[in-house]
Image (tube, rainbow, N blue to C red; front, side, top):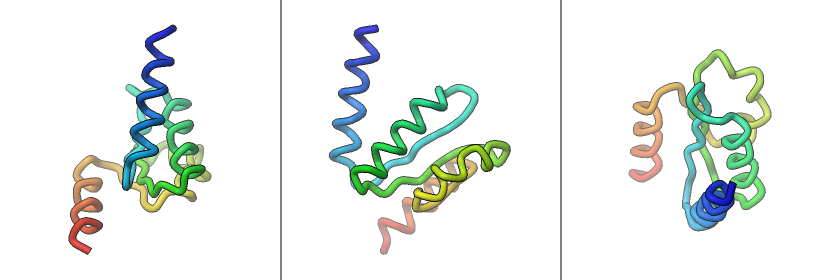
Length: 87
């Protein structure tokens, strides 16, 4: 689909210009898209935090290993961002 290619350009541009990324994995999100985004962050040297349920920790061990942090809830992401910004 053409729209998915346009979205890929948009996502790549956003990752290239971000200071930090949050990569969300879950039932409502395509896992391979999130894994690709995390890989792009890693390749570009962009710090990222993963957000996912504990039930998928093992399949994401490599992705989490390259992440700066892992969170289970959006509230934990907020706490991480507050800490990083206040530093």
